[in-house]
Image (cartoon, rainbow, N blue to C red; front, side, top):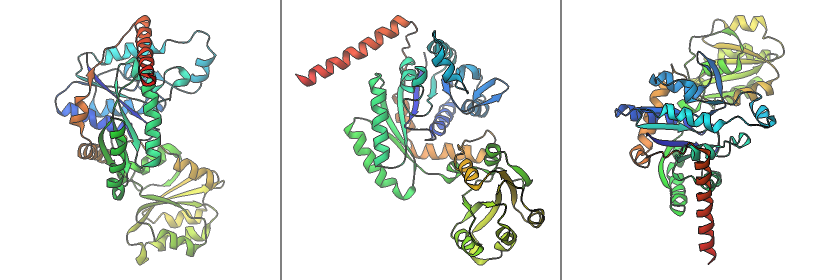
Length: 398
């Protein structure tokens, strides 16, 4: 029976996939046989294996894992899944599907890394929250949260209690996306929280612009804009984006305060700003700034004369139909995911986790899962958990 670790989080987009990826990489480098599983997936895409969670596809393709992705991701929550589940009098046996998949994945493995989805309670609507799944697979949980102090600790406590209510042992914490100038302050506060609750702090990971910002390729895939001009730089990471809808002088003042690769969202009717773009690169204040993409918004396509002027510039030119607010909302709502061919991001994932997470200590607390496959056995397990809770409560009173 393989050892397993369940990577959970206080919210979505906290970095579960980043840590799961790095853990698998380190185990494989140490010559362990490793399996990966995301029992319930919400962000799926069509593949040659059918509808599969995108994190599963990434990890299978990068590490060339031999396991069938349909076992790695047995439950895909697509549109209408929840409603259909709630409307059925006799519910599908999701537990059996997850258990059968895990039994397949863990065969001949030393470790299985299990990744949750969203916060601890996600999946409750289909009677399979992250805590339920961790309990089903007899997993130890590593809980992740985004960098901060007040809000971070509040969310950690809420999720920790949810797991513990289900009898799950949260063995430690990883804090991700912490601003570098706040690392010491955050670490000091989180250590106090961990000490109070007898938790281990496995690591504090600094914010990485490479991992935290989308590439041009991700933006194009997610927004599906009209492409008028492309510079063959889809792997270039965006440093910042700005809405430029004010008058020209104000636009220059805003842009010159930024640095790196910028994407400008410009309403297609703002002709004076669009005409001025070619001259921006000649300004001394723009020496650390490159406008590498212009994303026009609006119900009408950009003016042909503007497109002609921009054609001679080393700039990606896109148009997304819709008002500026809608386009910006779509842009800011992009979920940053690493793609199989983005080697620079993969290298950054391995480096940043290796340097900031005590994985050796983490793996020490992994254990061989004692999974109970029968319904009666699982019911007995729940009763034991409830009995122990009542026992503790009575002891406190008396």
